[in-house]
Length: 390
Image (tube, rainbow, N blue to C red):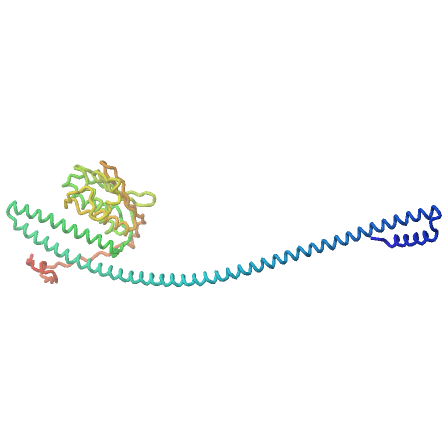
């Protein structure tokens, strides 16, 4: 910049210099000073001009850069707009496709649910029909076997020679096998049909085991098998009828497939908040590769000749299904050549209140002397029996 004082000084020196001329030394020095001031002012002006030009050039460069960025941004905005438009179109396409697929899947799901509901209705009707059939078959077939038993009893009463006794013994074995087959098949069928509903209540487990042992000793003694009982007074929450049937099947298997002069132990004990029923035997054992086969229908590992005296292979199938109905755990351990132990774990229960569990005493039945008893029977065979008066 050029201050006002410098300008005034230059003007004064210029006037003085022209007034004096070049005749004196003072004039020379004044000229030199004037030239120096002019040069200084020129340099200062050049710096001012350079600074100003640089400032404007910087602003211009900044403006130019901003314009370039703006152009690039505008171009990118256009590209982004094109991409956004394409994405929006693709999104609309995907939305339409998704809605179409959702509608199709919803339609398929509705059809599947309807088909499932129809299948459930058909299954329920089939179950009801199956239950009705089993009920009728159970009644009719059992009546037939009862008739066979009665006829067999009459023939035994009239038998007078050994050959007849031998034939009657074979007939008795055949009838027993048929009855066992009927009861086992009906038990499996009822359990599979889901019509068996457990009647859960607190019961004495040791009393159930006592009853099973008492019923099974008659089978164990003729076969030379020793049946021992070891129990504790435990209360469990279960269905006594179903549990007794399952334990009886386990004990029957332990007796049938035992070694000569073998042993069977029926026990119960409390463990980890549960009552564990165990059936031990000294039989041949169960191979590890047949662990699941033993619970299938008609599977007998130790009866290749299919001897009916050793059962039909339905006992463990009934036991497993019964355990599932009762909600108890069924496990077993076996060592080949040493024996097997089956375990059933049941929930412990508190003893019922004595006052609440009290059962009213039934009045004694009246004697039937000198009374007429009318029996209605729809089975012809049952109706052919003669009636005797005592």
